[in-house]
Length: 106
Image 1 (cartoon, rainbow, N blue to C red):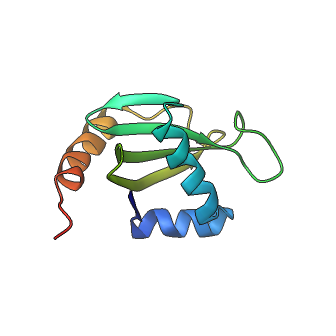
Image 2 (cartoon, rainbow, N blue to C red):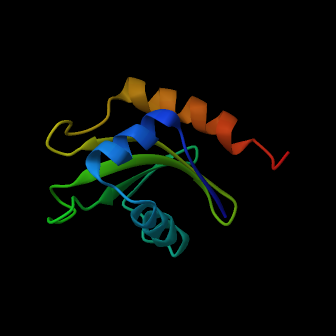
């Protein structure tokens, strides 16, 4: 399994104190089928606990996932800032996911 973060997501994670270990735990949960929301086209939304609190008031991360192969952390937000992603954003995520998940090791 190869795990990647784009520049925007890396900055978000650093600013919010989200460790690489926490992100690996998100991928591990996906691998065993503990999926919070499968949005289609390889796009998933997973809950991530805020340090010192639970998942319900924490973060949501949008990632592109192909089991056993690739994961791309693409976007993250606080549940208190955004209730849900828009249809326009979801379409955009699916377009990007299609390109990312088509990449090979080369």
